[in-house]
Length: 209
Image (tube, rainbow, N blue to C red; front, side, top):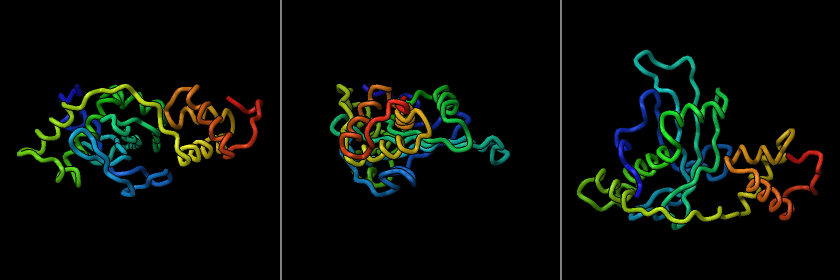
């Protein structure tokens, strides 16, 4: 059962956050150009972005400003979503992820995004209950964890893998692993599939990593 404790009150102290339909510019599945898919007994966008930044506080914009975008995709029929890509502006990605995870685990950020989407926009009209908040929490609490499915490998995903691989100055497989926040074996498998699809040149053992 999904833990919804604390999700309604919003992001933790010191951070501001929002959820946007679709993924950011420069990625596949741009803002708004996505379909709603079933989620529990409601609907949310198949692709969505969690945007996190420092809370401005009483004195305006923080001098140490940064922004983190977490790109999620809903797993078909699984009532959950998976983090596909993370990008950070004006700060190192690894240290920023550590900072954000100290406040909330990524699974909590994900569940907060699910709740936000179920309460807002088109999803709101599809939640049939006397109280929007109670209905959304009910949808989350009645979803059941299921066995994780292997990522569906589409042509678009392989094209994105190839773009990251070819843009890397060195250790391209490691670049794919870090870009998509996955493990090395999965990144290597994706690279192999992209190469088999003709999206990458024959392997060069000197540059693999």
